[in-house]
Length: 243
Ligand SMILES: [Zn+2]
Image 1 (cartoon, protein in one colour):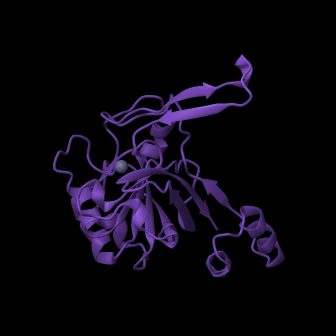
Image 2 (cartoon, rainbow, N blue to C red):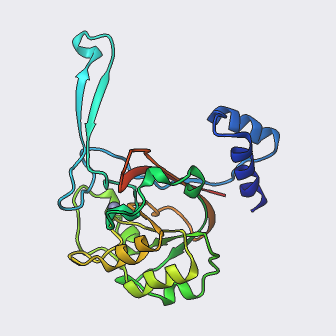
């Protein structure tokens, strides 16, 4: 715990201009070495599962060394909600906040990773025994991970989701961010999107598409940094857990 808090302090007190190498060196000098680092981001590629209706990833190679040009240069095209990504309130509320309006520290959170297995949805009782404090995050590792759904090419619609009652409890607890191990937190085909609405109306960010297959339950620091795109209601993020 102290190690993580020190990391926060180091990072924010000294400012964001410190390079990652600088952080590593300073971290080593101060004895801040994380014993465990889990990259929970899925690879963005043309073979990733895509939620129906979302724009898949594609790459155009504008310049290629192999064809005699001086450098490699790519252009990408993809939906804002592909792979590991964050949802912001403006995803469901026109006047809600977009991701670029949040300060960077909102994406560094004390987090519980919780397994909810042999169950088709996350229910309030799955949160009841957890000691989650106001402002923290909670990430759910479900049958979606056991079935390795995010590591398959094709989208499957029978994934585990969150019940609206569990979403309401997250709001009551004051959770800052909820994460799930597939491309949506909502039951597939649920047109009125009650879970997204409940969470986003109360400024609870949603982290979807996290790969928790190899992650144990427990307490971590979550770092999930979305691309800083103007007015974005969603954006891919690099998400890692450390402790
Ligand atoms: Zn989304």
